[in-house]
Length: 290
Image (cartoon, rainbow, N blue to C red):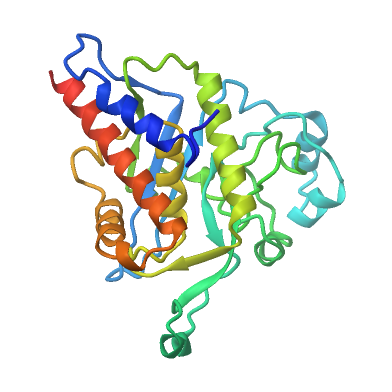
């Protein structure tokens, strides 16, 4: 099980007691990929962060889906088949947080509300996005607006982020890095996968909004979900966060610290999780540098 806020203090105490001079190294989890496309205001790039879970069977396709692709069915046609998929059908399990649509509300500045905000949904599995896909013929390698957030959905066995296709177009992803676990972490890859899925699903159940505020402590978006998944599931990022290369993370964490006096219990919990992720990443970096 992933750590929760009730277990956070215990986990932090365990981190403090861990020996960074152990001869064993932090272990890279090659079956996990952290994908980053940072926001770029200069290039009008909205960006996206997500995490991918690599299964050995992800290229297996069930007969009905294969036939539908041969027949050139649109997305709407695929949905109308009403299949509860039992195979991945080429879609990689992955998790990210999306707005139902990107909306800017300038008037919100007069009401102390976020200017860029809307309904939020795991993997972009929202009616607004699904409707934008319905008249297209979309394969797992093609761009799409909507992913899926449930198991056995009409397209795949597992949930998937709508950006999962970019692994076929690696030049469009800014960075891909695998996370690490500390030497004393004995979980199997299967257990870690389960922890990630549980955390992502729980996030989707607890939050129904998306917002961007230039890495402010108030925002909730794809960066937020990725960082919470890593921290909650005891996954370190020594190669990026540990090297201070993730500006979204460092700015978001600093904002949480600077605004702690006006923070809600949610913000306080997130601050503790960001501190935990930073500490995990620095410990893994130190461990591997020794």
